[in-house]
Image 1 (tube, one colour):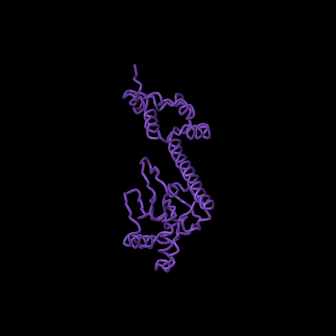
Image 2 (image 1 turned 90 degrees about the vertical axis):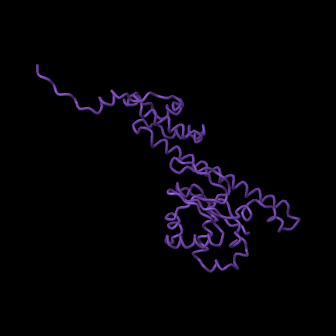
Image 3 (image 1 turned 120 degrees about the horizontal axis):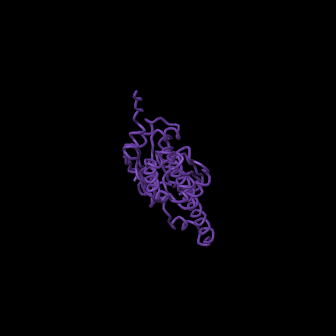
Length: 265
């Protein structure tokens, strides 16, 4: 339905979570079918720009994004969408963006699912038009098997690099989330802490780590700053695994109540 997304290969910036964290990549490519030149959308420059933008933003592989504290599963052919951000990136008004979305939805080229925090755009028939398909190579002559293999290998290698870079960007975001929540006076050796985070792949434990950190911040022991370990020590010793006792009511009252007046004898 709609136009057939793309068969010549064009270099692109494949953005995923980068929409939210400001990352940017310029490797990879999508297919742009030659028959698109005959479509009426080509004459509508704003619509064509927005459709091209959707192709470039769509993920080529499933991954998990973090939006605040929420994990969002993104499938191939989908991307996280924000109207104001898109308006800025395309230098188009938000009204024009809304109009383009309406046209693509009515043509059956995209669907969009929105929440109060974000929207996910899905390009229909993504795998059919953009997936790995040997039929593209069959257009070349039979005496070019080596060239075909090199092209396919090059594309796959680029995509693997994209995934690794995107995962690294996402990991940095999760580390920064932890770093901001750790008591500021005890944030020491951020570089070593980030290295520990990446090496141990602590992204998978982000929920448990943040929950453990919150437990410690509300504990009796951490009410005295001198007993709060440096962030590096806390990570190295995996202290999020240790549950600490919360502040007692007596301790809280002592902190909040004004001193009693002296009595004359």
